[in-house]
Image (cartoon, rainbow, N blue to C red; front, side, top):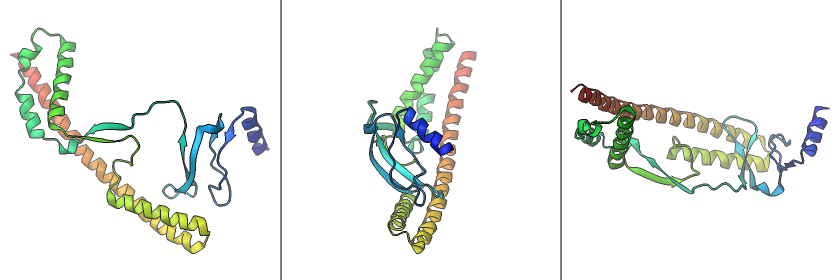
Length: 211
């Protein structure tokens, strides 16, 4: 009864279901619903995510939204923090803030911080679509191997191929978790450095106000 109601609801809303290949065993349990048939392109059924028994669906969603192909980001862990500290200490904050109210001082403070970051923190240019930041080369290799084993099992349906896939899948899951944990630990260190530098500048700002 519930299945029939769901089917009628899809028809009543004039929705189009794009998935035709089984996504769990021999069943189509994962759906992609749109209002137009041309909204979905290059639909591919991939290996499951983590230890899930549902296959993932990768596809292109056709829209009119403009997306930049490349973006720039700071590589904070490669920043020259000694030079940044010296640059901040060399700024004449007293003269800079003279005659300014609190909001104006804050805006000037942010501008100077950005200028220092631009000078002493390198940038990287990358594509908008990329792997997660914590995925290293070793983890990427395991994920590719996982997909290869899943594809073999998907085509053969053999139990032995599924067991091989499960073993490499478990290794890949552990590797991703370890890489993410390591990345978060390093990121906390970088964040603490930036926080300490900001506190140092704020402390200097308060001392200049007292003078």
